[in-house]
Length: 345
Image 1: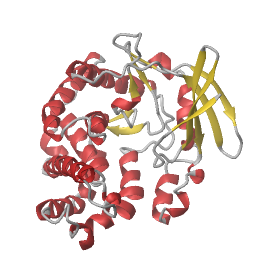
Image 2: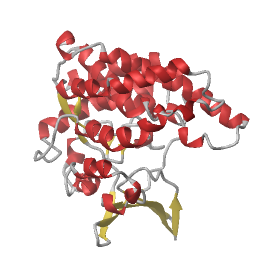
Image 3: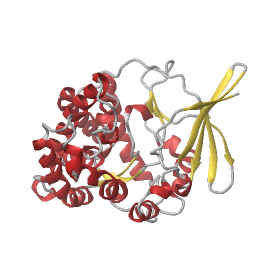
Image 4: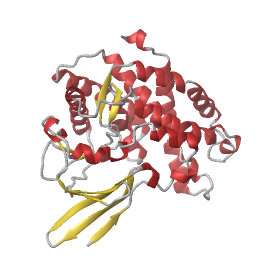
């Protein structure tokens, strides 16, 4: 029996998710597809398509290739990959990936779990880099952030934030200062990209949110790391941004908790790097985290797409939370632009 699983359609290489079930067993199934099969591909501006294609012709299948590589042997104790049950070629640049259906412990993330995840990410990044897990041909510094800026921000996210009509909405009319700060951060976006590109680079997971670090119910202290589609060469500390912001995106963590969590993640990550013999100035890690966080999240935290809906208590609360989150992200981004690699090296 096949049970579809809902998924975010803004993931270009995911063509579908589901569970295969039989008597006493289940498996997780994922269709991995070429960018050109993405439902939003025809709607993308030419500039966005070009940005995605510059990642490489075979990049769409990277997740499958990594699962089938020796990556699992490179992971530090405390991280593992899901068991791969099989890969089926569906033709026309589509693959069916059949994985272990992890029995997940859904208890809330606490400080101990966050700290352990950050430390293990530090160790993972060093090991991936030393083993050159990702193919060396064509890897460019902070390539994922450059692709996001070219494909999602410039042509898609920034124009609505610059539109007067957006800020005339009753839920946003009082946010003139935030609008001005977002506009200033957008002007500094090229500088942010220069900053992350100049920082020390490590091979990284690329989307290390808590949703991609599964906690098995019967394996204490272990994370099952999934969704490797965005693995790339990135600034040291970059993965921490998604670890920090993942639960806030789902309104499971308030913006007021992010500053303390930010410090916990950076210190734990630096300790993980050191365990693998990689030593770097703490300020560079914080800069890599903050600049990447601003590029990836500051311009997309507001649910602008919902402004056409009737104003309900739920929508008003959603915007209240996301406005607080956006203010935090913009402050982090603007602060990052005042720090230069040369200042903290």
